[in-house]
Figure: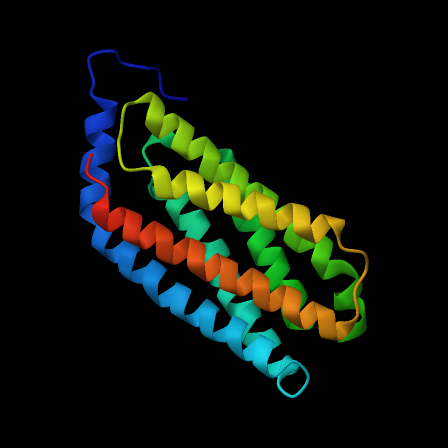
Length: 196
């Protein structure tokens, strides 16, 4: 554990690290958002015909989001690291593995609740980070708060749904992928506008 040094400017360290990696992160978010949005739209438009293909694409995309959360956690400044980011990364990877290897019948019974908990963790992590950044008087984090509330709202909708059929699962997965794409796109736009 590193001890707090009152003479060191941790906010400036965060700003410098942010500026160094902002363009790469924004581009990765935009590409991932496009992949997730395309997978979600295809899953909604062709629910039965291409479920297996979209299931694999969605699984890979969700695993990539989980890996990105791990990378984001390790590259963050020590005092701004959030353990929720690790939990979110683990849940994303688990969800991706579930989507990749589980049969449709078993996936239909489990996936809605796993998605709900994943969204709760993602939303909590985003709200927690926004709160910490607001504490340090960093501006331009409204998109982060919006994304956190959006994730938690969708999680509540998922938890209120009973066990669903495979067809409804397609639409739930499509909604999850499209909401995640919108969240990533909003964060990428917020990165472009935010100035420390």
